[in-house]
Length: 334
Image (cartoon, rainbow, N blue to C red; front, top):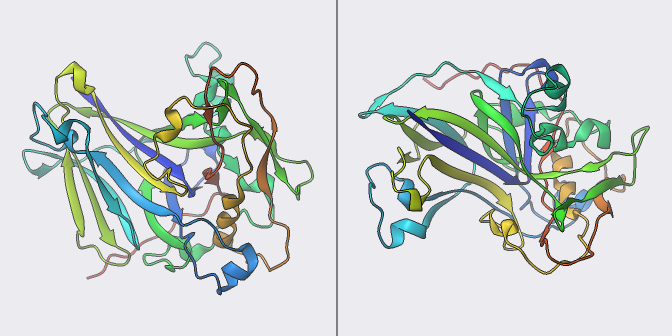
């Protein structure tokens, strides 16, 4: 028997694989952009001010190891770690001892369906809905190599995690009335304008034996010492408490959406707005974007606000996919 560990990402998270997505990458580095830069810095002069962002890790207290029948606060309340210059790590343990896993990452993408037409893959699961920097701004789609250093520049990356095991896919695309919002990146800089639906939440799913716990840790960039640790699962067997899964959220959001789940709730149907915060991704580019250079952002161009029954899910604070970066050897500190 096993349970599902779901690690969800939302907000300004840049995905950097070591190979093209359809070539089965060995791993993907996820970089949380430092959107809270000094307004007087080069970034501030080039990109302008953004809403304050809150990079964090969040999990429910009921998922802590040893909580068998959660009561009171443990049912609904969560713990949040605010991230400042930290590497996030996922491990596994049994009876307090580390459990090794055979690392194998699978990314759900459109070409998988083309190779196996009879598969049960859902179109909304495709990682293809992650905003592709290569099609948006061909001169800004390569990540600055310093972002992948053991100790990346703090003004670029506020937190980071490497994904090398499990199934990675889209978890939520922007919709209005249960219909996808189609966005176009404006101004268009590629030969063809990038126009597509966009995912604003990505999920990594791992099947974990029901006698094994998930060990979530963080450490400061450049230091292997554990800064914080939480041991999660196995989940309670009470169906009322969502048995069968453990969920952790990694988000880099603004505007009160920092818990990452508010967009699931039905609400008044309003025309979706553009995502001005997408400009923050350009600070990660290998070739710096100069002040005055056009910076494409997603603008909704096709959506349906008739009916008013389906609720709305914003397309702001999207995630983004950078071009693959060659493997980087990280040396551990003695």
